[in-house]
Amino acid sequence: MLVFDHFAVAAATLAEGVAAVEAALGLPMAGGGAHPLMGTHNRLMGMGDLYLEVIAIDPAAPPPGRPRWFDLDRFSGPPRITNWVAACEDIGAELAASPAGAGVETPVARGDFRWRMGIPADGRLPFDGAFPALIRWDGPHPAPLLPDTGLRLHRLEIAHPETPALRAALAGRFGDPRVTLTEGPHKAMRAEFDTPHGRRSLE
Image 1 (cartoon, rainbow, N blue to C red):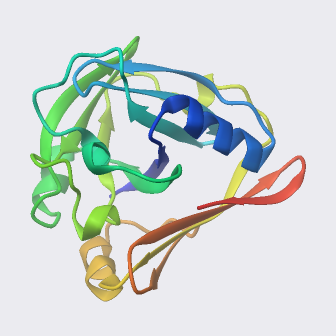
Image 2 (image 1 turned 45 degrees about the horizontal axis):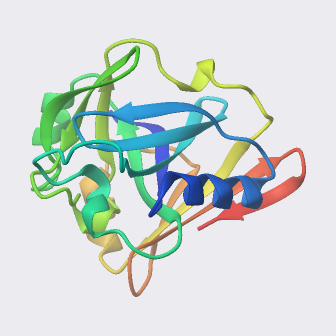
């Protein structure tokens, strides 16, 4: 079974992404750091059992010698939600049950955090990134360690022109009611939140 873990807001620069998220939600980001394996860095915001991350290419890091995750090498434009991540216990079995291109189980570290993740060879997850990246935590999870600002996810809506096939790929494996799959002309993600300032949204 897959469990909703977090989602990613990609940005051309980390500062731009953090500014956009903080302005939209009216809350501060915290934590984060560098991913040496991928040449990226991030900042986080807790949502109770979940968190969101802003992620960008780290200009201070050497090129990783491989495509970066979340298709960041091809990212352009304003900050936006590009990917979501689902946790599992047996990542090998879940990757084997996933569509082609879901990735190869890869050990990753950031500071004291350790995890294994399905990372595609070309950096592009199935269904244009509408299929979740799969993760298996090998230690503490970031969410309970982040400041609780009162932010909670109300809904993450994922649109894609091949939604029936995406639903079929997740059938019997994932069922969090906060994630809704809808048909649309192109892949798009939109999140709604309950905040101390009322309902807010991000795209």
